[in-house]
Amino acid sequence: MMTLSTVRVRAGSAMTAHARTWSSLLLGLLLCAPPQAAHAQICSTRAEMGEAEHSAIQVAAVRLFNLVARNDVAALRQAAIASVAQDFGGIESAVQAHGEILSGRPPVLNEAFLLETNGTDVLPRANFYCGVYRTPDLMGFTFDQLAPGRYAVALFEAKTSPVPYFVTLILKQEAVKTSAAAWKMAGLYIKAKTLLGRDGAWYLEKARAYAARGQNHNAWFFYLTARDLLAPVPFLGTPLLDSLLDEQQALRTTDLPTDAPVTFSVGGRNYRITQVFPVAAEDRFLLVLRHEVPDISDHAAVDALNLALGRAFFARYPEYREAFDGVVARAVEPGGRDFGSLLLVKDLR
Image (cartoon, rainbow, N blue to C red):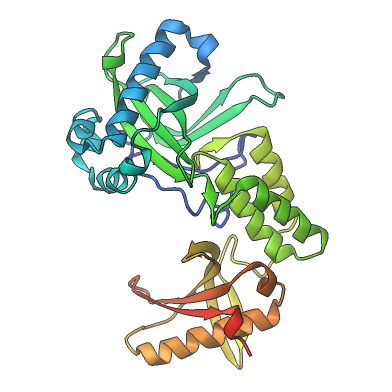
């Protein structure tokens, strides 16, 4: 199967694992085979692909959007490529969760791009650059393990209330003809444009304010949140997103697990923290600390470990009290089971 990866516009500068977009939801995968040879990668904008090609992509994408808005899961499955139709659970759940929200809202197609690769073997990493280099309109898409073929990316905006959404459809052409019927659904992303009622511009403003005050930890996570909200999908790059990543990377510290786990010592105990990332839950902006434990069976003991970590974390980095409502320390055993404990700032003594 093909995987999609977040990437910057500049070639060869993939983001760190920690700087992933944490609220994006991958709902479909494109069909591929084992990687072998390299291919050409071509992106065409509307003007470059021609009106007939663009019209066929637009008609197919709008039809698929309307199926999502009508909660017509059966028709959507029939309109998908085989690999997606066979593993449709994620898309079905997303459609059921968002279909009613999108219902009755005329889709606004912001952009549509035609992506082409040649040859017969999979391309381990496909980088598509769309538009004119060194201009604000440049866009880049990166796919890992991409099978050769013709694909389209349709970027919609749904102005729903109170939360607007990005809806992105990935299409694959399965017939050699310029018609809407030739295009099948290969992926679907549905993503809110705001978090806790605030958009990416607000989080960016806060990130820069924290950075100016030397609160680099807060700034790091607010840059991460801003970039996520401003990007419709995690595999898209633009000059703006690229510049924000530059700003964020200038704040990189060694005490966050951006590339590898870090050790956090509390009262003689070493916690091995594997991830730190922000989430929104119940109108709260929280930090999640994932750390390794051998076993979570004794919930009372693990809860005590989690709370000790949370308190020590706030004590060492008091700036977090200003930016976040609390921390969720989540103990994870080797098999993947986890146990989380919530510590709110208002409950700290």
